[in-house]
Length: 136
Image 1 (cartoon, rainbow, N blue to C red):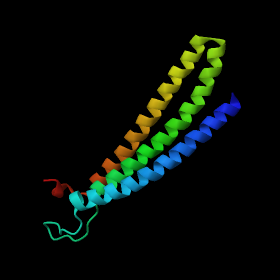
Image 2: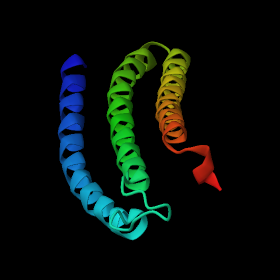
Image 3: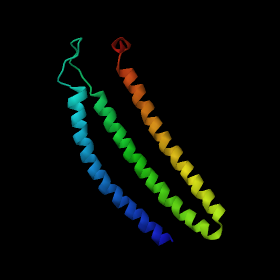
Image 4: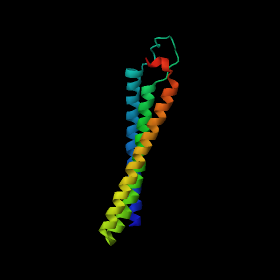
């Protein structure tokens, strides 16, 4: 079982590498579209300020990177939990179910926690960067 689990983890990592290479290309292209369609850095602000930061594009790219990190963490947790569940199901199905259920709980809380943490960091940093007079 350990050898099979090692092979499954290696296959999962290989899959994620290929998927994330394609996803990085997509994110770069779509980020350029968002930059041109939404942020439009070539336009000068109404108050004449020429210093500009592409908030929407940055948030999109950070969100994509967070999603990739969550996918990697989720895949690693799932493959680890699967081998433990398989082993325990051979002994007692209830114990195997309990480990699978708890593994899913940990996976869900870690992924949601990471996403909320990154979202809170972005919100706090954007709030600090934008002066309250610019909100109206």
